[in-house]
Length: 316
Image 1: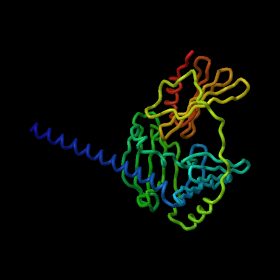
Image 2: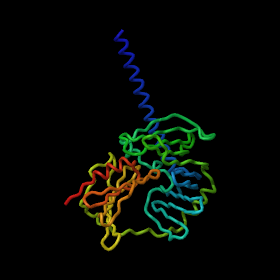
Image 3: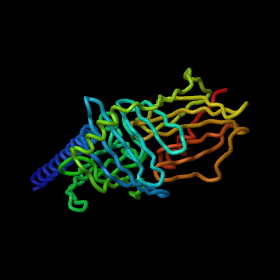
Image 4: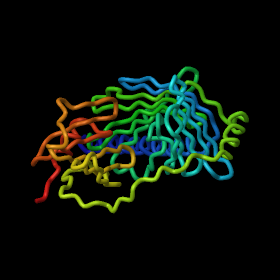
């Protein structure tokens, strides 16, 4: 009897393990298909972004023309802010300001960064879970959950159009499954001649000049971060003058999905926040250590920002 019970338990464990593996693989395949659709299809998407302080209506157009990605994003509120991508240049147009261009691979303003994330880079730090099927209005959707393996960062629930593989809704969640921000598609049009003609005309327009940053010699700092969540790497550092004798030293970190900065100023130059600030994905936390103000700014849970700030070590 005990032998049969052992066999039954082992079989059950294998079935559960195989189901979990299949769920992971299905989610991984769907995630890659979503990224490919968002970056390669010709489409127009109208959507809303919701955060604690703002609701922003947006129209986004995208196509590949002569092998070059062309995109246009327009905020449909009173600001009429427009962003245009042509290849690896992204240009910003806003009433009352001079237009400028930056180097970049994708427009991420108002679009969830997860749409353009490199699966191979982020997979070691997140669980990808196939959460089944649902409907948004009359559209059948497939659901992916992307969960931080160490609980040090935010999580996602993504609803993907079953037919086109384009996103329909993206929820950014904290560790308690509370929604911090939401991206919700109102309508999508595929392979529209109007969209193609509009982007074709846009591809022939001369964009404003690239914004030139002052050359930075990768400055050396007398401090280092002792604790980073797994997968986060330093991507840049800078030294900026705030006044004649005031400077701020900044190091930027990213795991390929979320980004934050560590900023150091002297206590005579910077002030400490009365309380930490968190607005959707953005956290600002500061503390003092050895006559320095350490300020963490970026896409981290408050508890993680506190750990990072507390781990900063100074050298004499």
